[in-house]
Image 1 (tube, rainbow, N blue to C red):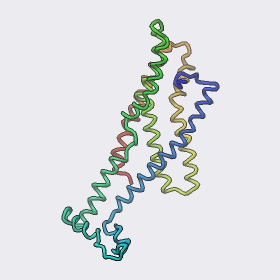
Image 2: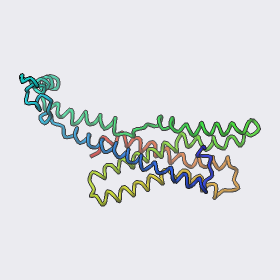
Image 3: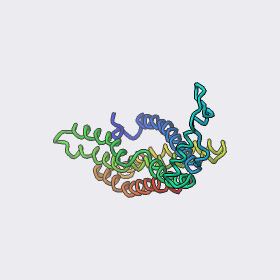
Image 4: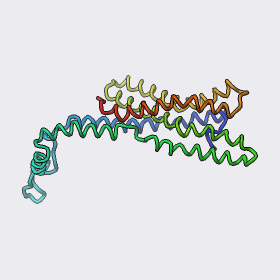
Amino acid sequence: MFEVLMPAGGIFLFVRLLYLLHFALLAYVMREYWHMFFETEEQIRNFRWEAATCNCCERNHVSHDGKDLPCDKDVLGECISNWFGSIENFNQTVQTQVLSMYQRQLGRSPLGYGWLVAISTCLLWGSLDHAASYGPDGLRLSLLPLILSLPMCLWVNPASWYVYSAVCRWYAKQLRIRTRPVRILFSVLVLWVLTWNGLLPQIYNWSLLQLFPDTDPILRRIIFAISTLPFCVIAICFLGRSCQEGAVNAE
């Protein structure tokens, strides 16, 4: 069944609450993503060529058959000195330029706006199927699911994802510096915030129905689209930029 077209209450509300449990699993996946991001970021920030090892060093430069092995690190060190002028210059390059590039490429939301719109097109396809069922004589009724699905596809769902990703990023960072009791508290708080983040558009749409029960349904959906647009644009632009550019200054 197509979720957007379900009634707001009754058993369907219970079903919606049940499928919100997937937010807990997705929050765990996103937390692991950002956790690995911060760990790698710290390794690059503290990188020193002198501390690096290779397989030949771990074997004490002796092969399996007892023959001496040349040190790969010495050979690479000479190449690095020729390319960068010195080992120290190479260390600085990794700690600054490589770190900046890493933060810009992987410090953003894992899914960009285009991917989020593409994922959300399932709503649009469902609406088209529902709209087609009315036939040529039900043109007005066929507009109802489309007017609701377009804003959900183009800005409501993408904005919700950016909020979701930003919250998980903050959550993963807090887990690195907090004590265990505080971590548990933050876990409950984050799950609560993410759940409401997913529910909010549906609750708002239901609230418009309760506040304006006698209003034309098309007009009510247009109000939903127009009123959500500025907030979603701000969320997409600000959180998208902060994930990409703000990551460069992340500590």
